[in-house]
Image (cartoon, rainbow, N blue to C red; front, side):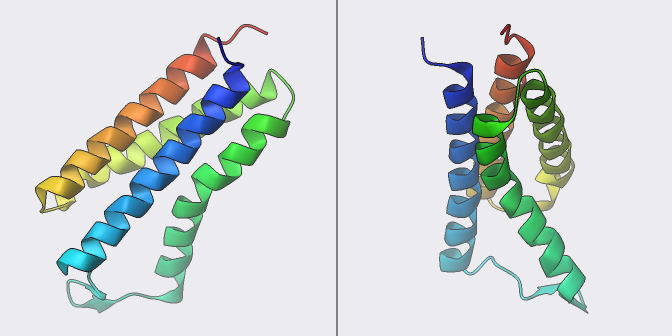
Amino acid sequence: MADVRIILSGLWVALMLTYLLGDVLRIFSGDFPSRMDTQQFTQGMWLGIAVIMLTPIVMLVLSLTLDYPLVRWVNIIAALLLFGFNLIGLPTYPSAYDKFLIVVGLVFNVATIVYAWNWAA
């Protein structure tokens, strides 16, 4: 079986690509808003989006470089935070493809938590 670090890194890559696929589909389908209801996106909102999108990339690097057991707990915490964020946001997406991709992302988060939780060095 592959090293847990490699599996965790692969799960973070899969999550990042799932997020990107959702964004691309949203743009092509015309579902990507330039405004949130009546409020224009602010620089702070764009920064928050950047942080969320950057999290899987940072976790990929951290999964390969941090020492055990810190890497285990960082993976669990990051996956739990993204799981909660996406679960809360799930009802706000109107299209079936978005809901499907969010659920796929949730599965990747759960797999990350399970692999990290069961990791014995």
